[in-house]
Image 1: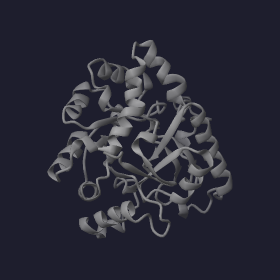
Image 2: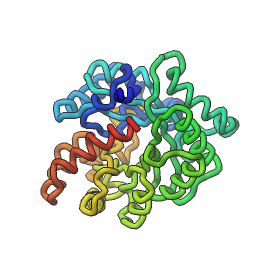
Image 3: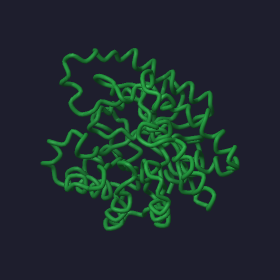
Image 4: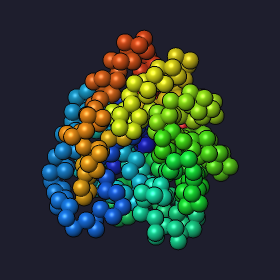
Length: 320
C-alpha cells in the first residue's frame, strides 16, 4: 500500500518523509485587531522572513524535518510567508485551516456563517488550496477557552469534525490551562470522528494525570506542546507529567512542541518577550532539542520512546 501523501506549503510529501517533527509552532501570528494599531511598528516582511528562515535552519541543523504551524485562519495566517520560509530553509512546513477560540479570534464575520458554510471553507482549503495561492492545508485547527465551550466554539469544532471526515485530514486543538479536552473529544465523537486522528493540544497546561489518562484512554494524542512557556505552566511540571505518562506506556500517544512564535504582526505581546521575561527565556523551538531531551534521558526515557514522540507519532497521526 502506498504511503499517504501529506499537504505541506511547498507541495505534498509522503508521511515517511516527515522525519523529526515539532507539532505545534508558529512562524507568524497577528492577534485579531493588530492591523488597527496605527502606532505599531511597520511590519518588515523581508526582516521577518530572515528571522523565520534562520530559525528553521537552526532547527534543521538540530535534526528537524517538519515544522507544523497550526495558525488558524483568523489570527494572521499567511501561507505565502510560510511557503517562502519552507523553500528557503529546506524544512517541511505544514499549515492548517480553521478558526480560533472566541475571545481571541476574529469572530464577528463567522458568527453569522452556518456550520456547513464554515466546514465547506475548511474542505476547500484542504482540497483546492487557500484562496488563489494553491497552497493546501494539511491540518485542521480548532480551539476552546478556559473551563467552557461557547456556542460559537462548538460550531467551529463541529465544522472541523465534518471537514475531517470529508477529507481524511486530522485535527489539532487549542485548550486553555489544560481544560475542556474531554468535552472536545465528546463533540468529535458525536460527529463520528476517529479520535486517533485528534491531538488535544496544550494538554501539558494541566498536571492532572487523571485528566491526561481519561483522554489517552479514548485513543487520541496529547500535545505536550508548550515547553518553555513557564509563564503559563512551569516546565518542571510539564516534564513530571510527561515522564510519568511515558513511564506507564503512553509514549505512542504523545507529541512534543513549544507553541513558539517567530514573528508578530503588530506589537509583540510584552509578557511573551524572552528579552525581558525570565519565565519565557526558553520559549523557542530549539528548547526541546537542547534542554528537554537531555532532561528526559537523565530521567531514564530511552531513545526509542523519544523517537516515538518526535518521529513515529507525527507520522502515524498524519498517515491514518
